[in-house]
Image (tube, rainbow, N blue to C red; front, side, top):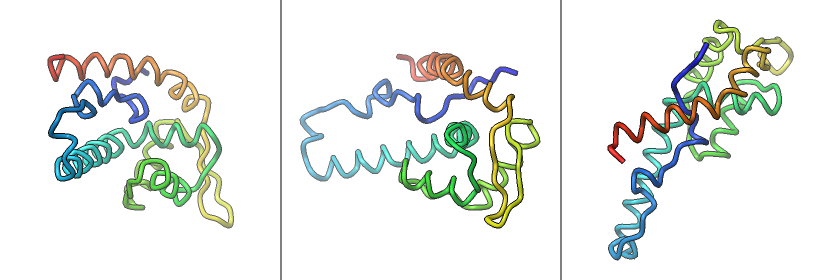
Amino acid sequence: MRHTFIPLLYLNFRMCGLNSQTPQDREPGVRVLQQEKDLRLKERCVKCFLDFVILRLLAKKPMTGYEVNNLLVKNYGIMVAPNTISSKLSAMKRRGWTSVVRNRHGKTYSLTGKGQETVNNLPAIAAETHAFIRLIFGS
């Protein structure tokens, strides 16, 4: 199954002009506004592509939803509601991307073969999505 979505790790924010420097960017107030805009875009992308972000995290090691949430905060500075993570993990299990084992820490999720295949296809998915984003933004 082929998906046409991109994980946050592959987004090229420069194509949207978010990292370009102008004389106004040197002013403190403009920099704060730019940082807020970057954070909002980053948060929106992580939430939109949360399943792919979680897949990338699970590719490193099996985790609980709590561990996934902690890594989202640590790696991206974004807090996602626990029920959102739980529902994404459940949906990923239904798709056959993850398997779950109950233990004393709760449910621990790990990638299945199908999930690992999806992770391996992320660069191709990223390229397709990048091309689509360029089409949307006209660059």
